[in-house]
Image (cartoon, rainbow, N blue to C red):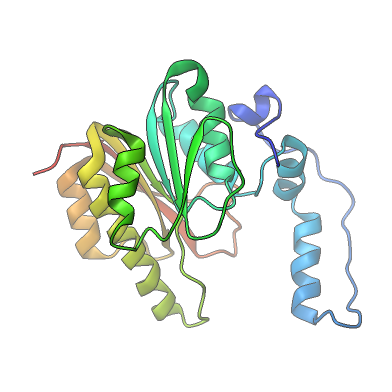
Length: 238
């Protein structure tokens, strides 16, 4: 099991380790050009190397760390929900900063893909979009949340408009759930695609939160269409 280890630099801000010499990957029997390019990008990605060094399960951990470095919602003792938590990088960062075993905070993650255990984190192995999932999350949370985080994304189809609609549907479902569990003043973070949040969801977020921003963390690849909507200051449900 990977651990949420690392130095203070990994726990709170700081850049990635220095770059090493670039690695070139050749095509070989059974390896397509596209797979060779993907492998080459992984081998030369400083965030991938730093994630391995710190024991993070994915480079995506840095995205949450960078968002929290700006908005400061992963405070010791906080209660959060991580929707679409596999393979667990965001939960690792949250556990480092909230320190649930020491502070009484609570971290609950959910994913349709099985996730290896993380100390201090409750992980549900089920589809968030199922009818029963919200109730199971609320039972595991056992009280209101300080933040609801969603890194959920449907498998890419290669058709930009379809992919946008699918990820927006997940963001809308995450927002609906956040309205049910967030404390007043709480935070909502959700992955969206370039072009930002669709008008209807953006209007709802502005109604429910005092501030809504679109953020692209430095660790998000420049050629990726992903962005994150960060809504702070939950006004409270109806």
